[in-house]
Length: 211
Image 1 (cartoon, rainbow, N blue to C red):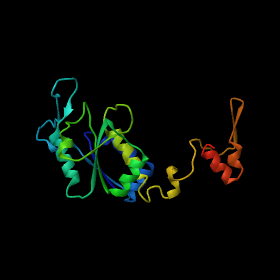
Image 2 (cartoon, one colour; image 1 turned 30 degrees about the vertical axis):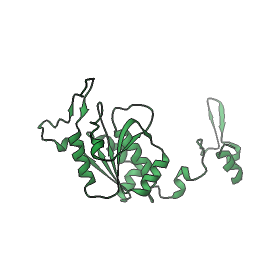
Image 3 (cartoon, rainbow, N blue to C red; image 1 turned 60 degrees about the vertical axis):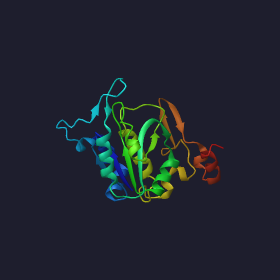
Image 4 (cartoon, helix red, strand yellow; image 1 turned 180 degrees about the horizontal axis):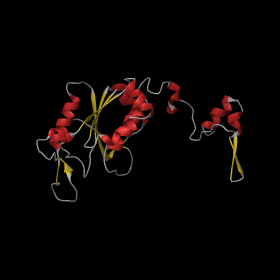
């Protein structure tokens, strides 16, 4: 799986990509992440890519042309490329979407906006999926891009090491426990639910399913 991130601030993703499971997945060549900065596709010596919005209003809008050129560079001549455009009113991202994307595509382009957004004509040039990671507004699209990279990568064979590591593919509970069996904090004892110590896997599964 190759993720292509269109962003003005590629360094914002590096700290997460350079740790834990994703770092190992990149080292093992299970996934690959490339960055394309729209500033690299302008002739302006100041590398400016934003202008005031038509129709008035606060803030600045990222111009279409440098983003289009960045997407075109990422897309190249590849076939079956998924292009994802982040916006608050887009389709809600979920695990089902992550699974489908991981199964059907080897290349995913994530278009991360900033400021007041990206000139909408980008979506007239390329077919995109408009995606939201939640009913709220963020400063930029880098966090949504990282969320999708993390979630989709988990669906790539070998990234987690074991299929059983996928919580969505097994019976699991929101609450988990580990040793010690009992600990005391401020003179009050806190114990692991007895059913988890019983060894009765049928009852444990029922407990985890909330039955």
